[in-house]
Length: 171
Image 1 (tube, rainbow, N blue to C red):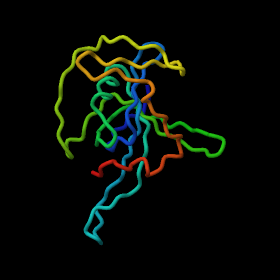
Image 2 (cartoon, rainbow, N blue to C red):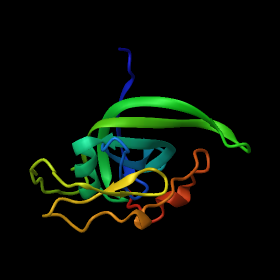
Image 3 (cartoon, rainbow, N blue to C red):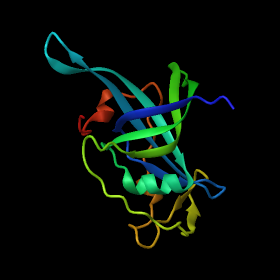
């Protein structure tokens, strides 16, 4: 299998969204912005370069754990399989880099975190939403179940703006 693997360090740019597929598999999605930083000898300071945007998808237990652990603005390191998909919305055309992550965690260079090992979740799914997806209830020890009405729409590829980073702490 010739899959392209990638490791990305960046900021979570959208609130993570947790859903349950019709087959009963947990799925979490969010976007990550990864901005190049380099030292400018002329100004003796760090400057920002180009920002790469990635759509990130996680499945099963990793999806459940990431949803409860990661928030918009968090600095993360993730690795997984990258695919570049072309899109055309009738007005614009472009490509979106999608990562199916197999590992994710907070970037400890910029803060601290506490690891809590959790038991395998046994929560049942709630009824399906109009789009054929169901939300997953949280395990008893966790917060209240996910409410489908709290889920947000995804930005259309190619329409991602730096405004998505508003409120995201710089590294």
